[in-house]
Amino acid sequence: MVHRGGEFLSSVIVLTVVWCIWNESFAGRTVTEGAIFSAVAVFVTNRWLLKGSYFRQYAIGPFTVLRYLLVVVVAIFRSGFDAIRVTLTGRLNVGIVDIPTEITDPFRAVLVANAITLTPGTVTIEHSPGSFKVVWIDCVTHDPEEAGEMIKGNFESTFLQSPVSEGEVQ
Image (cartoon, rainbow, N blue to C red; front, side):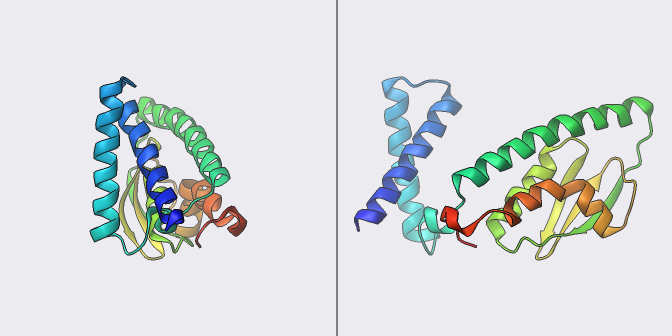
């Protein structure tokens, strides 16, 4: 029970910090509101929506999170410059590609799909087990393997290389 209480408190603290960041304030009232809303959200979600706790459902180690964030930020900048080049030259070659994925965990698959969508020039429009369907403004190939490496390469490998020893659920 202490372990679950610790998970509950940790979740409330993280969500409260997110609330304060979104509100751009760490004033007492904002922190209190965030703590109340967070506690209610975690309680309702754990009680009626999840089959387990947040930590078990969405376990990702801190090193994997840092690696993922670094990979996403670098990809956003690189893709941004590519998208600017494609747009300014007028050489749009928009296409929809199906790319395979080895990610089997739905949470990690959503993180990869979101990373693809966050990078300029690509939007994930569908995910099904084993594949993503992506709109790509510089569609240089329709080969699933080649397109997959170009679009999702480092995003997916971040989660495929993450060690189980970090406390992650595979």
